[in-house]
Length: 113
Image (tube, rainbow, N blue to C red; front, side, top):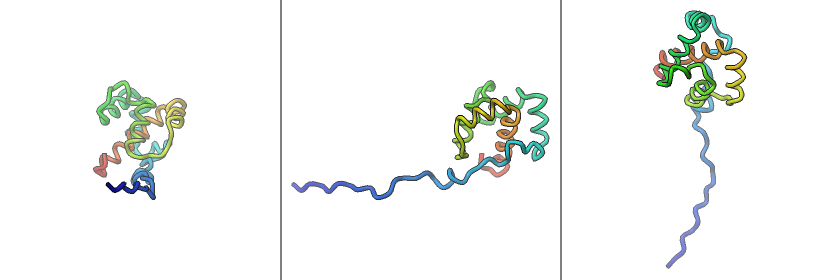
């Protein structure tokens, strides 16, 4: 009986190229790129939060949370960290939520959502 040669792995699997090149469709302070989302986020934060949660098939109470932002960011390969998500949602919750909704809207328009 002959012994099998060990399998030698020469390269390690890497992240997909898509995950490395994706980014947010708009910046955190790009409110004027979708004024309707900005107005909704400013005057009815909870309504916009529920819209985001519904878009992502999640509980309405989670729409503006760190968990939702992190889930979305990892789903679309957007660079960042949970710490960064936490800081943005803590210090600028309206901007964070509006950025998330603008990104969803743009990805829907490109049929990439």
